[in-house]
Image (cartoon, rainbow, N blue to C red; front, side, top):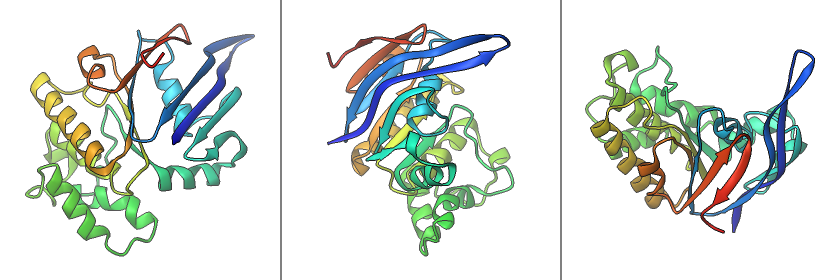
Length: 225
């Protein structure tokens, strides 16, 4: 089953009097349960593509179908609903809420949906990432690796169909990065989630089922083909 289909997608921005093309005619689809790495040099359009796939931004042309939803035909509220129901995010800079504890950060997505057992599930997820003794710590009291583990637990809180990760080990030292990689892949397998990851780390990319290479806003190779 296909959970993501990107069809003839382009993204342009108006820069003064000229148009800047960031993505040009991108086509690929991802099957449920597959792990995919998007690689390429800085400025190749990787993060822009990830944002379009996740419904964080609008395509200029083409279509993105995410878990059966055509994103370009939805309004902002509908897109936000799809994101909360279908996807999880892991960012390079963690994006934890500084005034909330680790436990509260993981509970947020579930509480927004009115889930009654949010605290119980959050505790279980934090135990899975090895942070059962850090529940009441705030982000400022946690190391970078611990903050990323909180963000991984939060990403899985809503049992997403698809997980988007943008340079998930980019701000971490080598040993911590390797631990985070293992956690992401292990949880991904346990939860049978589809993983789409932007990374400049080719060793990390090689651990995924499939690699697509971007250059100059174009998809130049796909290991599936």
